[in-house]
Every structure is written in C-alpha cells, then in structure tokens.
Length: 200
Image (cartoon, rainbow, N blue to C red):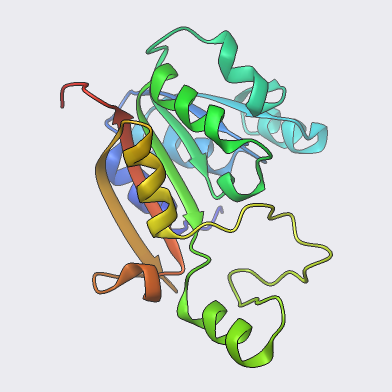
C-alpha cells in the first residue's frame, strides 16, 4: 500500500474528480496512482529516469520519457486542467520557464517545495556555520540534489513579478498545517496557481 503524504492529501482536496492532470517529474508515479484511485483523474507523467518510468508503467500510469524543462514547450495552452510540480522545483536547473509554462499549459498549476527559510536551517547556519540540513532536507552540501534554495517569500515574490496568481497556499511541517509565520515555521509549502488575469 502506498503511504499518503500530506501534500498528496492537499492535492486531493484541490483537484476535482475526473480532471486531466500532468505530473512533472512524476518519479515512480505514486501521486498519479493515488489521484487515479482517489479522484478518477486522467493522468500523465513526465520523467527522465527510465527505472522510475518502468515503475509508472507497472502501476498503469501513462508516462513520457523526457526533460520537463524542455517538454512543456510542446504542449498547447490549457492542455490540462492541472499541472503538478511536487517537491521538484528545487532540483530543476532553470525553474523560471517551467513555472511560466505550467500556468500556460494547465488551467491551474500546483507547486510544492521545501522551505529553506525554516528556522532550523537558519539556526544551523547561524550557530554551526555549516551548510544546514534537517530531517526534511538530510543531504550534505556535496551530495544534495537541491540546486535552488528558495523560501516561501521568494516564491511569492516570483509569482507577483511574473503575473502568476496565487489561488491558494498551504504550509505544513511534520504532517501539521502551519498558520502562523509560515516562512519561519513551515518546512514545506504548496501553492495553487493560475495565469494572471484568468477567471476563477
């Protein structure tokens, strides 16, 4: 049985039954498999790892082998109801065109990412003087897949500067939703986005 994650549960809350969904960096297809069973979505994935793609195929997930930084260019406007980037933003080399294309290709976009401004990471850097890590981000500086160290405020600023509307945002830490000072106390964030000027 696949263990549900809190971001999966939040995404389930957001996505209506029967939606057309594209999952970027879908990995082994856990999220699409979950949504297919819970919400009856029509799901597609993109990933560049052949072993993970094989896992998707075993789950009955339709998946395309490709680079998400290039693959989105080939899709027309509003090709999907939702485009998802789940805990992948921080490892993408060029996130700007990916995010801009997400709100073009999807009527809505869902983005989740770890918050590098969490207080535990700030304290580690301030008092230990070393590249910070915590349970959610356990990597050493030399073996981390993360190449962009963004905070919740960074992402909000990006959306504002690129005319991307934030329809909903949720913040959480250790399985609990965070309401107070999320940029300081939330380990992870999830945003529901749309292209600026689109109707609700």
